[in-house]
Image (cartoon, rainbow, N blue to C red):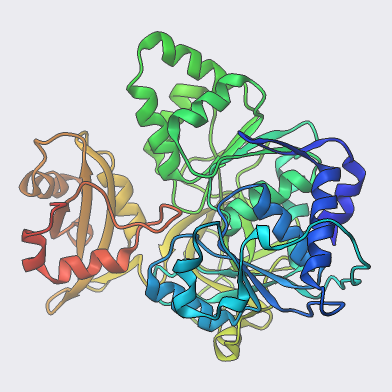
Amino acid sequence: MFLIDKADQYGNGIALESDGGVLTYRQLLERSQTLASDLITEKNDLKGDRIVSLLTPSFDYVVLQWAVWQAGGIFVPLPHQLPNDDLRFLIEDIEPSTIIVEKGSLDTVLPFTGRDIVKTMDDYNIDSVKNLPSINNDRPCMLLYTSGTTGKPKGVVISHLNLEAQIRSLQEAWGWTKQDKTVLTLPLYHVHGIVNILCCALASGATCRIHSRFDPQAVWNEFRKGDISLYMAVPTIYAKLMEWYDDVDNDEQLKLAKAVSNLRLTVSGSAPLSTSLFDRWYEITGHKMLERYGMTETGMILSNPLDGERRKGAVGQPLPGVSVKLVDEQRQEISSGVPGEVLVNGRGVFSEYWRRPDETGASFHKGWFQTGDLSVEEDGFYRLLGRLNQDIIKTGGHKVSALEIEEVLREHPDINDATVVSIHDDVWGEIICAAVIPRTELLSDDSILEWCEDKFINHKRPRRVLIMNDFPRNNLGKVIKSDLREMFERPSELESDDNT
């Protein structure tokens, strides 16, 4: 196991920090080994048992993750607060042998499972170590669920080999060293927080400072300390950081901008980074944000370079150890400048969807994973055009990228953010619908539609507009476009919606 083996080399180096103290690599290793021994009290190897974590980002979370791996189990991190229907679905799908919850959270899980498998970290006697099993790298180590923005979440099976490949690729691409220190403000049930931040830091001998939740002032305070070297987040978080920055006085802004300028790297991902956010972050910090692209099933796929041009609006080039090609609808490889679906191959690509052999088989073509994302390659840089099933709109005989329309809408001086969906129309096939977050109260539907007449060719022009306080989003800030589409399809409900 790559991470566990590396930890032994880093000894008394600080692995984790939080407001509650520090944990060295040696302490992390010792605590996880003793917990692993307790997890296999009745047998010598968990042999793929699923251990669900409903813990918030914390030392306990990492200790449990490493313990499950060393005991031969599959670690399944889930949000610690889930709607009942979602939690019931996931528990039934996973069939866990154990569920670890926060103190006082037993009642949230007990209606869906037996008391005998629900535990807290206090239920374990972490005081002795027994012989732990030898773990082959081909064995599964994690079950991560897709975001579920277009349907029921699917469990993605990741092996120790997949995880190691994903980590090594990012270590090389982003220059991780044991001198690095990062701050984690993302949830730890998606690949972004788990692999890109936590695992890369710990595999490199670096220090990861854990925040249990995102708070803009707390993050700015971390930057002010001067010891953070890199930061990774989603566009929504960067937008909130900049909103907080805009609310302080000029002297404070100068101090904050100086603090961030000392970081060696800031990275954005998990959702499209608008060119306006890219420009504004550069204006404040002097940093050209490094945008990257990846998926739960593959880890990271493309990235702008650490050294060299970071092209705004592009997600970069294939990462080390990752092969990428674009194909047409007949799965034939296409030439530069022509849009096509992104296909991926490499050691980091997942092995299967949990208990879904048909969907696993349908997601691969001759060994290449079919991402369902449309992209175009221009001068070696890839630019995403959206999801094939929700961001490519077929209207009036034309194919239109929702992401391109969104970028133009964000150029409107009174629009803070925009997202685009389509709904069925008997004449056009589909019509383009735009939801926007305003900067001022003066913005109106009619003024937006009038502005669009000069900005778009006829078939790219939005036909309906919805002004909102915010969009429906998942926990990583991705817009849930299926919910928006339903709102446009039920105009009578829009009239009474509190967000309009």
